[in-house]
Length: 351
Image (cartoon, rainbow, N blue to C red; front, side, top):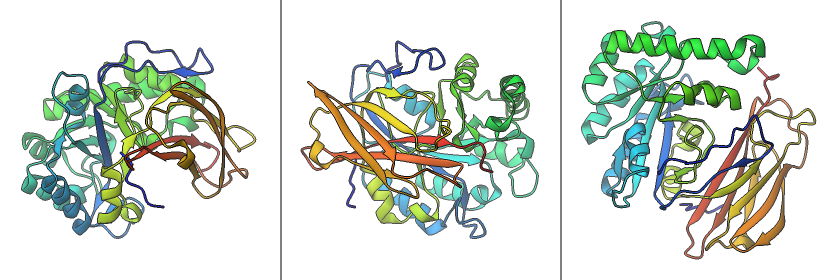
């Protein structure tokens, strides 16, 4: 498949736990931000979370050559809501705080003078393969933004609901306190461990006062994006070649007007049906396509009303043996640029 797919604060948030459909109120402006997630650098022991040093430098060189403004995650959120002129904008985020970032990734960011955001889980700081507080202080003083990634980086969806939310809230507060004590900075952005959360967990993150939260569904952040479910393109070895990076950085957001269901929990039948209403302005709907990780999908156009199109997407077969599965929808516009949206399903019964 050939893909070249291309903040205002959301003024109205409709609580996901109270209604079966999430309604997003589009805000003015068409600014977009393409965000990437990295973990390890130059550590071939873990190919599913590793990016080669060569690939990472090629990513940074491309952004530099093509005049992208590269912002921290929080600055990108502010840019979307500002009156600043439109610019090609990218965000580099790194999760977990592995030593391989300090050894291989940080020197390259300094070389290209790019901002980035590092989300740390405070329980592991200084242990095993993780950066210690002194190294974290060095990169913070060098301009790197530090974000909150909870204390334990646990699978919170596997906890009983009776304890899940208090534990999640307490871990966020503990991590905030530890980062403030050790680094003299209070994080303003958050990243969900493994990209997993439910509507109530999202409400806890909002109530904690963060500007936004990063998830792990792929896509482009836009004025209509739920800022507490910001998509990021993964840049592990399977996706990090120069060609694939170029494809992703050229993508645009597929604007979602309505989405049902609003959460990400895999239903019992394991053939989840996703219904989306998309803004079809300028899109070539004849080339609308969908993808399911590890399988095939069925896409149906339900109705077209003016500038909106309602579609359904469903896996052709039950999804088994996968904890996290993405439904992805892509479509080109009249200029040949591709637009992208993905929805993450989580089966907490798979470990």
